[in-house]
Image 1 (cartoon, chains in turn blue, red, orange, green):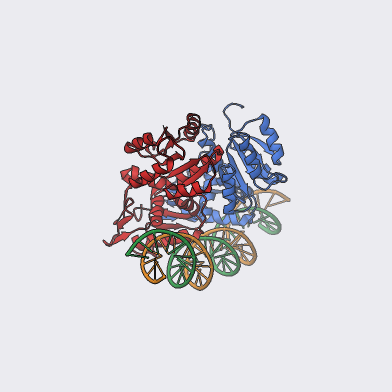
Image 2 (cartoon, rainbow over the protein chains, first blue to last red):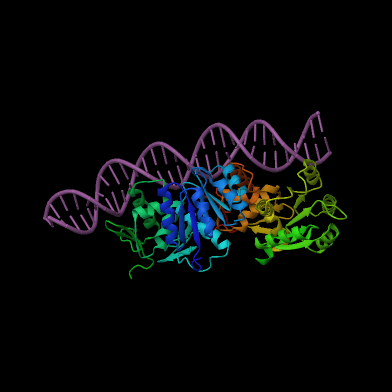
Length: 240
Length: 240
DNA sequence: CACGCCCGTGACCGTTCGGTGACATTCGGG
DNA sequence: CCCGAATGTCACCGAACGGTCACGGGCGTG
């Protein structure tokens, strides 16, 4: 193994999805390896080990469940996170009974996916430091306070603010890239996922809502800044 | 949280099998205890409690069925997972009749065994924490009071409230995540188990019932809050 | 066997959210 | 200074979701 960086194997036949997942895992600091089908994956696993296998259920040839059973039969206990096209509960059982550890229905939110990956790798104990992008439960900025566990906050005026799911997710993504520019496309990908594509105006609207909630003067934003022609930028402090 | 690590008692006379099972359970993060026969096990249980008993049917002296009946007669409701040498359906019936909760034929796949252990302990998790820690045995919020040991409570109006098992379990799970959002899926998994799939409407209905019991104005809930599109959130105090 | 209690489901309806289009406004380049 | 493009802002609509109720099946009990 290359040091203490966890390695993740992604078995997925859709090249587009695979590329996206791999890139994001890489960005999180994991070593990654892709495989287009179960056979490829099993060959690779014959001579490598890893901390987690992300396994699509629907694969050409041997499907994910079969591959997982095969793995377990070989005595390989690497954690498996299943991806499936539908949220069919029966699939969940089949996944668990074939020896999987977790289960995620497509289309999934990138944030949720990364969260589960992190959880699994932490559970298996390989993963202590790394990942500077630790999820912060409570965000404070300019007199506002937001708790992401409850989607709830309090603004500079002491007013309680109940965020919707999307509002909270957008704020979270912006805050995680605090100070950096985040393009509308980035936000769409991180909040909405890969398979859904609302227009970029939708993003504007959520920025608008966040400004109304947390800016003293929404017309003169000090936290949710527009970067003309590029995207948005979040600042905790008004003027640096 | 060291008190909340589930403890598993393994009653098995084959030292080889016993050692393997114990080691694997330990690797899963459970606290373990071994016993070579039923008498040993009963003695140990006289002064300890645990979350699960893995019980071999074929034991020297008192067999597993007899021991299970003895346990139940003593009022001990600890879940029991039977291990038996043959997949004889009659054995399964005898196991269930003597008060067992699950049943696995030897030789079994390790993964399947661990899966069942996990499932049982997840189902009974709430119960363990209730009976082990007195702090969570009684919940008080907004003039209401609920004793989880008796499924009984008293609401703000002084009316006595007899909770059903499911009502109590849902309330407990929500309370344990006080302030945080709990999704319907989480509730289903924690209360019902991983292999049962009631619809999400079922969860709504239990929330409805809890609101009727414990909210001054069920239409304007202050304790059982809805988080649209995500799940529910429990607050002890109306507005924190 | 009948009764009652739980619990799960389907249906109905009101509500909320998310996404879009229209229009006003601002920005930047020529 | 003017114009086109990007963004701010608002109002609206469809769809999805949750609240609520009533019904029915299963299980244990008397």
